[in-house]
Structure formats: C-alpha cells, structure tokens
Amino acid sequence: MVVKRIVANIAAPDVKTAQAFYRDILGLDLIMDHGWIATFAAPAIEARPQISIATQGGSGTPVPDISIEVDNLQEVLLRVTAAGLALEYGPAVEPWGVTRFYVRDPFGRLINILSHQDDS
Image (cartoon, rainbow, N blue to C red; front, top):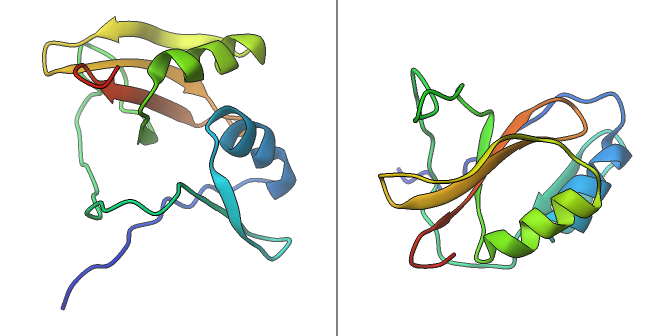
C-alpha cells in the first residue's frame, strides 16, 4: 500500500472566496469545482505526500494550519502586501534553513508560506 496524496480540507461557508487567495496570490490552478468543494493544485511536480504533527510552529509561533512551500517567497510576499493582508509572523530567516511568513487565508486559517533558503 502506498499513500498517493494527502489533501488539506478547509471548511468554509463559500468556496468561491478561496480563489482570491489560493489562485490569485499563490498561483494555484483550480482543478476541481463542484460548487460545494473546490480543489486547487500546483502544476505537476514530483513530491511525496506529507503530514506534520507539531507542538508549536517553531521560533515560538503557533502551529500553522497549512504550510505551503513556494519557489519565490518575495513574489508571494508582494502579492500578499498588495492584497492588503496582514502578516501574522515574519518574514523570518529560520535556523532550520527556511525563510517564511505567516498570513491568514479568507477563512481565518493560519498559513505558513516558506522557501528553503537556497531557493528564496
């Protein structure tokens, strides 16, 4: 048996609201929309399904609901700023090799957006 995919599911009163954040800011493609559920995905890349269990978010921060790794953190930071979204933490260079910031999505979920330092 092989786990092929792990999907984060976020309860929300209106899935259309997700497009401005997940599509417009993060650049994800809307790959499924049934009206009651919308799924966004990055272009196909080879990645292993992951799930993290944590007691804290590192550097004394709360555990984020989702961590999203991007290839250009500065570009996403500019989009977040242009959208008028408040940063909850960072940007910060962390001792474990990532640069990251926290922002809340339209549903109040705490999102950890990061790049590995050699990628950022």
